[in-house]
Image 1 (cartoon, helix red, strand yellow):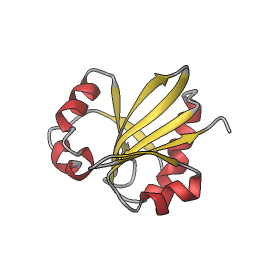
Image 2 (tube, rainbow, N blue to C red):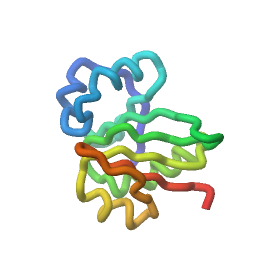
Image 3 (tube, rainbow, N blue to C red):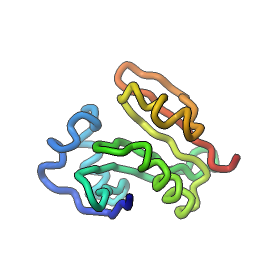
Image 4 (tube, rainbow, N blue to C red):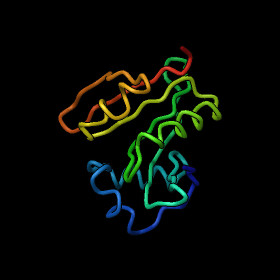
Length: 127
């Protein structure tokens, strides 16, 4: 599984509607302005939007949303991507209730926040 950076396209708001959680226009602006990046998995219609942040002196790769297949396989690539960018942590936003079972427990993500529409997970890469 390999992710390639791609440009925003008009139908993306429809393609990622479940995972965008009402943040589509905000993330669209961030991608178009270079604040966030849009990625497409090379062999499927799987997309994710990420951005890099610095929080309390720590470089964090934020996975804003992920739409598609094989999230468990993608996590390995996301971890490698974060390390390659010099990030010390990954923060993952999701409304997928099964993510804890599929990803968090398997890779060591800790749920740091639960909201009405989403959960936020953190993986410390420095450990």
